[in-house]
Image (cartoon, rainbow over all chains, first blue to last red; front, top):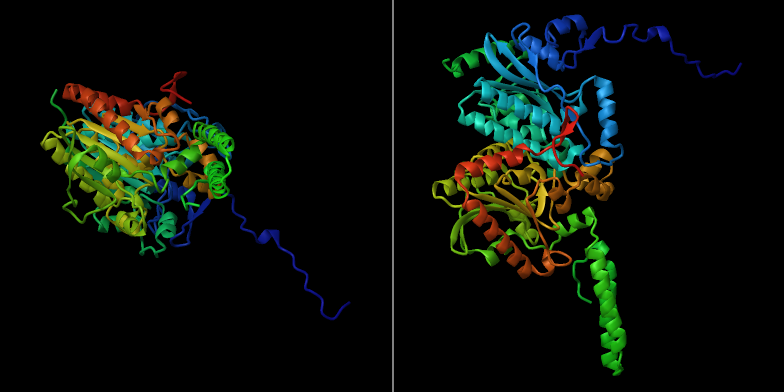
Length: 283
Length: 328
């Protein structure tokens, strides 16, 4: 036996975390392991640190709306590859891949419901589907949500999250900014309240259209909100980005956001605002 | 040899031109008659020109749209309009020189011009920020458009930007909000509005002054949700794939017409507007007058309804087995 032999290294499989996947979530803020069930009961907000994990649109609607009041609309809208987009992968393949992976048709869930008995037209974006990028289906469903508010003379709420316009739909996706904003112009003229809720992250094309146009703009704590991505800004300007740049808190300080609202208080805040702003038309 | 700016795909043309000049020089120096050779090169030059410029790829069009000699908004304003009075500032923060605006006359008709302006050299580009507006530019544009509405002036918006500027100040002063508000308010402006993409239609930065009764585009201009380089960097992880991205994005004028994003494509002189700026200006002048005549004669309510529906219809999706709009 040689005098200086390499010690034999072996890994002990038993030392690996012997926890079933999904049972716990690790909080990126306080590093605590949080029981997933406990998280779900608290709308995916870590009770100790206030960290907001993403929440599914279904769960969000459950938390925001009166029980059993939600009626989904425009569920049959399907994205199509109008440009015959040929990138590394085709758009068709991408759509199929995400539809299979998420079980969703596209990145918005919309319909009507009630908040403390006040009827609302509401849409919630879903980041799991292609980064909640805005293509024709997203634009159309948001526009119909706004138009439904107009027709029924009820308030409109959009809970946004998005990486921006959907590249695979090229110029068609850009024009969704025009379509949604024009519908909001009519809502504004009709003096119906529009509440825009910004969640992590809301950027680019969505931010440069309906997400920025709320009569009231509410944001979840620490949400990333902006037009250009931080990396693009850094590369273009060669400048160090200020502390907390493009967070909800940064934007509250600079005058874009009306309030930062923890998810667990969102329903009450919206209810209070609607009570103050909305007068139901007399029958 | 002239040190002219030549695009990569224009090289065969330059080679032929050089050959022609060489031949002329030698024939003069040596007093030899080379007329037949010269004629044949001239003929070849014409054929090559047609060949190159009538089969432009989307990426080649993007390069022409960005050509350093391409006429910019102020060049057209000087040629087409009279008595342009530039009006400065957003009355809130500053004066962005990448979006300019002011009153002018199109023939006898007073109008409000809103335009994105690039610089021709380093000094100008510092002033113009390479045509990449800050929030102040959009807010100035809105101030002037609202003024136009009060005084019954049609708005003419000339679009030419790589995109809104991605900077710290732009984010701190909410460029996304400025663009969104412009889009919303332009959809309601009671006066006639004509938008024309004269060079680069860079995403939200272009759309921020891009809502109107008519949207026109020059043949080699482009309008896109993202720059070909940006798209290539994201999808191909390499900006060198910009030509593929340009093709995939369908950002050229012919595709935009097919998708009903633009109402009209204005033909450019062979090889691009920079080859004959006077002729280009004449075309633009005629198109603006014609379109303005058409939309000015409409009833305001009806015109606004048509403007709304025009953008309302954009986008293609499937519902109950039917497609909602034109595809490629």
